[in-house]
Structure formats: C-alpha cells, structure tokens
Length: 162
Image (cartoon, rainbow, N blue to C red):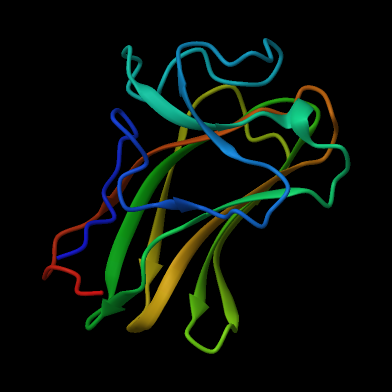
C-alpha cells in the first residue's frame, strides 16, 4: 500500500527528488534563509519541517525542482490537499501535474508569482488513472524567491496500489 500523505517531519516519505533537475527541495525547519520571501515556520505554526525551494540557488528562471510520487492507481476520483507558501518579489511558479506512463503530462494545479505572506491550502481533484504526481517549482529571480510546500494529504478513499 502506498501513501501520498507527508508532513516532511522525518523524511520525504514516498516522494522522491528528481536527480536530473537543476534545483533541490530541502527539508527545512524554522525560518527560511531568505528573510524577504520564505516562511518563518511550517504551515501549522509549529516547530516542524516543510519542503523549501531556496530561490537563491537558481541561476536562471529555467531551473526547476521536481518531486515525484511513486506510480499510483486512482480507481475513483480523489482529492489531494497540500499547503504552499509563495511570498516575495522573485517568486516563480508552483505546479502539480500528473505524468502518465507514456511520459505525457497534465497540469492539475498552478500558481504563479507572489501569493501573499500566509500559507495557503490547495485542493486538487485527482482523475482516475495510473500515473505519477509531480510537484515542480522554479524561481523567477535569484533573490526574494524561497517557496515552500507542506502537509500533503490524500483525502478519504480506498488505499492506493502502485
């Protein structure tokens, strides 16, 4: 049985960093190193971890960080929720898409640019099918561009089978 749920407190759970992209997601605790853009704490305002894209590591706007789920089989529509933090003049994009077995992609969620100082919750309908989920983020500028995600949850339904 596979779970997509992850609060990033111990590790990245079943989510896997893309080793071929340009940037990495960092498991982070406390305040983001960029005091003008990143969160001060995780979304629940506790002393727990979240995943952080350090925008200053991007050398240009084409550099991305990707995080993959294992292959999942969705037999009836399901809902995925997660929290994201996108505050700063240099914030780029955050996307969630499905990558099918044939390599084709379908965008399920996108936010572009500054979204405000607070953590925001996203709710995404997952269609029926067999695919991987991919979080992809980039920085528009080298500064004021830290972006974070936290607390991924697959809402009630049957267990996933990979």
